[in-house]
Length: 310
Image 1 (cartoon, rainbow, N blue to C red):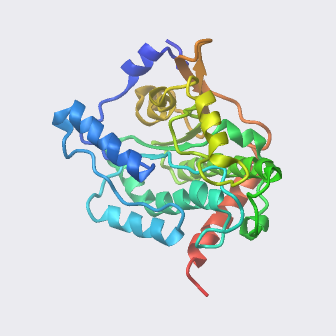
Image 2 (cartoon, rainbow, N blue to C red):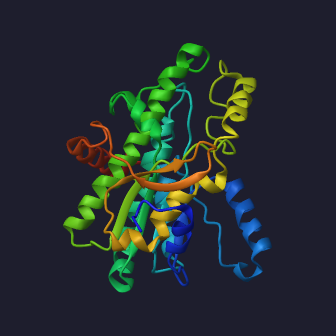
């Protein structure tokens, strides 16, 4: 069976997760609801899934969250960097002074994951396998490239005009491009250090209308427009289907068997929008740019190192 597998084979390929420690970033409210749903459906898992506080919009909070996480475990098998925001206006910056989508989608995850890398490395050595999955988006294809000067520049009044919508899509695309750059550069560095059993990849999850992405960022957009967009997206992909590619990269035995490293994956859909399989997708030229990947890493390291200094 080819690694570009059917859904049935995908389910069969998922490895035994008994004893493994996994972190999946996401929305607080939906995370707590998800935990409650799992415990109601599978009482044997009661207490096995815990909520851990993580504010990705702040470098310091992400760093503190990683420190808190280390206090209760010395093992970390899987990280799925799944949380994200979109369509936020540029009228204000993050607490650390960066464009808010870039701050949450990339810098927060960069801070949290790099602070826990020694646990991931240790786990890969002892147990032979560790995974890092960074959820990107097909939206990276709309990226205009990372302009680091503009990432620290607010635009008062942004979001009040429909003319502000297209630049917001571009900024979202740039943050998703940063996700790919981070995943690829991290995988390259881990392999250079000899940690070849840490499988770091990125993916596009699909289009799930039941998320909070894009809500409330634009006065010009209006609540009615958001509802129309979500209504149009609702029949596309279920939340369950939109989680399968991340799950596959995080848990399928085929990822280690086929030595899948530094790749970008995407789901494939039938004409009725049913999940068929997931597979590697070739990145565009801007996504493959290794010099830009290294440049983002250096910028992010500097941002984390200098955070909080006057």
